[in-house]
Image (cartoon, rainbow, N blue to C red):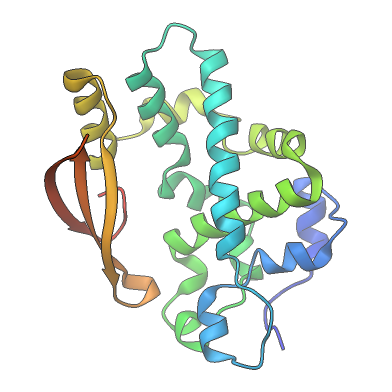
Length: 217
């Protein structure tokens, strides 16, 4: 049985969207840790919705910036988008929408502050975007993002400190006129303290390997 403050009517009113599939909306809040702890639960986690939401978020934000910044270079568009969709930004928006209280977590994740974990909150926001896309379509996603991520886009871009991935991306594009390619080698650790090991390539040439507690570092 799912345990969370899942009176999602309040959330639907807050975001101005009434879902046709309430099951889809509920799935957006099921963290993978819950499945590990509750073997009898047969539903999916929100990871597939997160994957879809990440893609929808990227195309909507990219299209928005392409229109709003007609003279910007590819590098500038890339770093601007990174500022708007980075973990910190999405986590703050998720907090403002009180998404954390609707999360369905394992006891372990609950006990270690999963409802306030920026990475989990950002991923949940992306899962919600994915659910909106499946239930309502890309136009509704665009409408939702213009009220949230894009409502103060200029200030977010100006105030953002570029993460290491964005800095590397801009440098490579400026020097080599291509984008770096990232390959996830391994990941380990609990959800609240995940570590990632990633190789960076320019074309076929491996340029280096790094580790960090998120994929942007």
